[in-house]
Length: 207
Image (cartoon, rainbow, N blue to C red; front, side, top):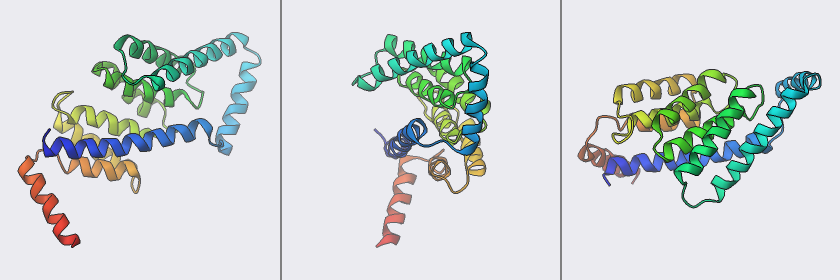
């Protein structure tokens, strides 16, 4: 593995840990007043539409079940992964007003990327940040999409990756997403020798 790939992996691992934390907070944290208002409105709609309630409840339970299977696995089997992706995407598509819809869509993209289903991962990440403007973790979706374009063995489009990193930095300033995007953008187009030289230069300044 090259120095460039090692540094990218470190950045991605830091982001992944941060994404997991934020997803956990999304699922267990207290809702804001705006979320409470939205939930109240949604509940009033559900009370007059039992079919909608039943369908979303069923889709949610299916998504949670598949999520627990994925979390328990040491390695994602493609068939299991695709089943989870479908259940997550179905919940997000049919129940877009639910606060967990973009969370499951983000998870669907991560699983799709892990089993090399790149078109599906691309769609999930794009829909996550485009269709859910109030989602707190849109920066994560954009970063993960940028990583797909960044990697030579994946979508391999440095110009698109640079564009997305720039959008993250401008759209989410002073956030972890912007920090990681800036670091990743700094590696674009550089050889291992250049990266090592910069790394050594930074370390010498700290001493």
